[in-house]
Image (tube, rainbow, N blue to C red; front, side, top):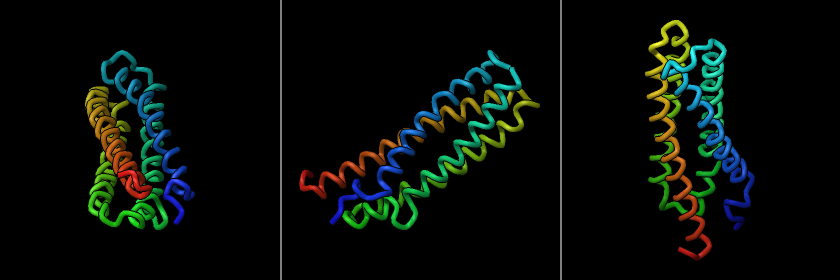
Length: 154
């Protein structure tokens, strides 16, 4: 049996996870600047909206690579069917993350006309980023646990 890490979906998901992390920090700093009132430049506001939209697209692609047939979760379930419940819970969280980023994006699109909205977007995004990082850590832990057990190390 080919280990999940050697299959095409694994490097794609790993690279997307790294890309997600790289996308979060600059967006968070822009939103902090806008939310604090330190930066009211319309260009910064437009960039934040575009970055949130791009994050939503990246999340959809990333979560799809995990959930789709032949994706990471399918591969992991084939070697560790006992983890199906953990993976189902993570997939349910994916939908909530998609919804949260869509709500943040809708609010950010209104914010240039209502600057007080940036405070709400900033706070919401900081919670979102914290929760997404915790979610990704949980996924990484599950993957590591399954791979260690699959290789006889668990």
